[in-house]
Length: 274
Image (cartoon, rainbow, N blue to C red; front, top):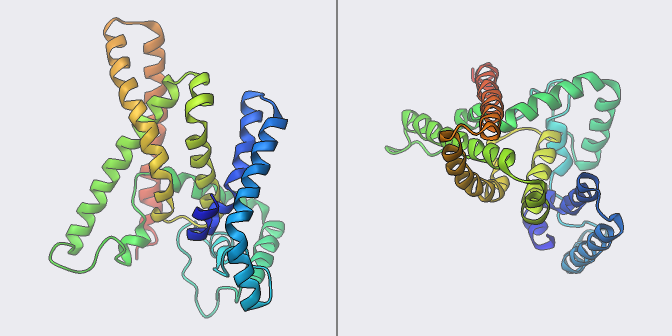
């Protein structure tokens, strides 16, 4: 985790998510706390040379970098925010540094709690939607203007990415519905907690498709289990087993919510393409 934090500072707080374990499964909090402290110690040992280097150069303690962590948070939490990438203007410039961004974000949350809650729900819906990041396509993040990546090529590529995301989410839904609690606790708690963590920090910031990339390894691991369970579910449905039918109904219901979420995201994002 310490090495990963050197690449992307947001990963630094990942161990906090492991406290979901005793809450969800009613397990020994003392044991989880010991593991958490050991992880913090390991992170501290990994980051200590970098912290010492930063202190000698900047004369202040900087854990990882002086990157714009809280500026990204501010971009998703202000009166002009839409949940997507925030285009600053001369009338609404970005904060000068992280400290100012943090203070401005706290002020916004205190003064406009309902607006903050509304933006949070929008970003949560955008995060799971299959529709591509409109701002990313508009600015050409999906490829350069070449023969291969023409405007039409970029949209085709975006659709292919969407289909992959739809399939991935469907298999993850199957896995979660078919999975036994004991399997979650023993085999899939770490990847699931990582997925929850990535989701949480993205929702608190602003949405961009690239923010979902760290989630993909865990999602692919879960989807591979879902692929096996899909085959088993089809076989059980052939024998009209009641439990399998109930699970299939739940899977389809959740998947339809995901589809409607994508339709809403399409309509929402297209408003900001102009």
